[in-house]
Length: 344
Image 1: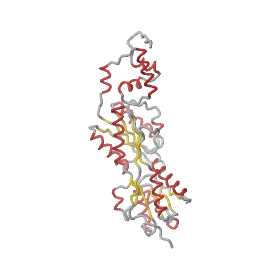
Image 2: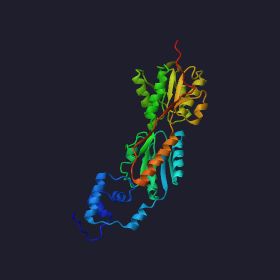
Image 3: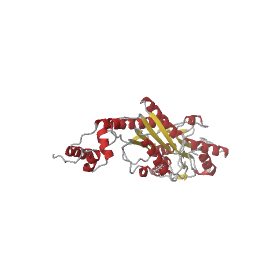
Image 4: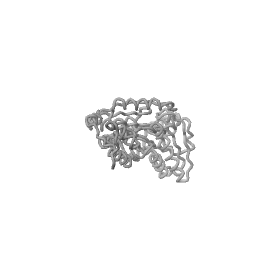
């Protein structure tokens, strides 16, 4: 192949222009940190050969030096799930001798104008040259935030609804909703109400979707109490004050905290589980086994999710290879809050 002559020694920008890619992509090609598609690598290889480009080894060594640090942007209120993910990230990072820098972006129910703060946090992580970033978000618009992400800094998204099948991880809230509802149906219940979580959050939407599909597949009519503006017991208690016990025999609550509040409100009104209704939550937080009655729930291993997420990111940092989407599946934990429906 004929070499292209240039007036001065060719540089990385020249390679990028000839290959029709950014200088950052050329940098990833040389360092191996970050994903470069096979067809793009071929164009860069051809451009290097045409230009006779020789990388500056000292500059390359500087660029490939690592800080052994990872940035974590955790969006949403701090709760059992997010705490579990952060714990798992911390355990895996400590084992790999990597320091975590954590930014917590608290969001109210409406979650307005979060993009500016999120972009600022991501820009800060890049400016301090972390080796990689974990973005944990319960919001549905993560694809907008990452639309122009150039992957010069490896990034893993923790989300129920990731924007890509690669470089992402999450729990399977749809399956949690479906399996919890199916368990109640198997116990003979037909009038099953869903106490929903905050509707602006991916997990709540997916759990409700699983509930609706399970009900409809059994020929049953879904009924949703949609009053929560957070994941707390307060929201569950509010739903319990509004619920009509005469209209249901079983309840699927979007998480354990909401289930606790609902049980408390119904007990004050003289209705107890499991004598008068069965109830299933989601999470299996440690206290769930000590509710009155102990709560049947869909266990989600958030700590394992955090560990797996860090290992995915660390592998990408070291090799440039992006992992496929990782999913934590739910597990039904049966306790005393559910019972087979009594037939007259």
